[in-house]
Amino acid sequence: MEDEQKLYLVTLVGMTYAVTGVVEGISYVVANDAEEAYQKVKKRLDKKDYGFSKDRELCKVELLASTDEYTKTRTLLYL
Image (cartoon, rainbow, N blue to C red; front, side, top):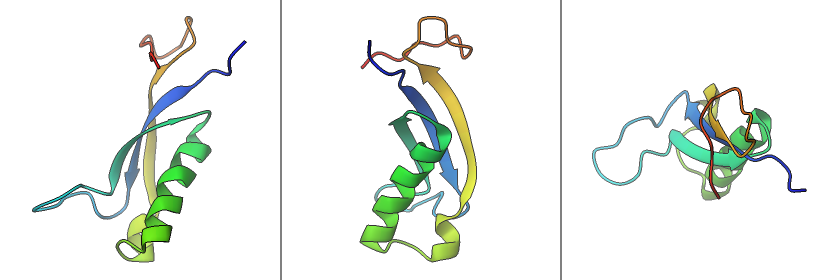
């Protein structure tokens, strides 16, 4: 049996808009839990040294969908 995967919307304190390019502060992430979702985003930004460290802090994580057939989000995630 596969582990349940979830789709999260991760929003950081900063980098939530851009005139050109990718908005780094708002990301969709597939992970097992909210902490893992944030850490995936933070790890990438830390490695690339994008923005200031204060901009990489977590604002919110929202659960959007899940691979579990009986998810409480009522939205299925297909991988």
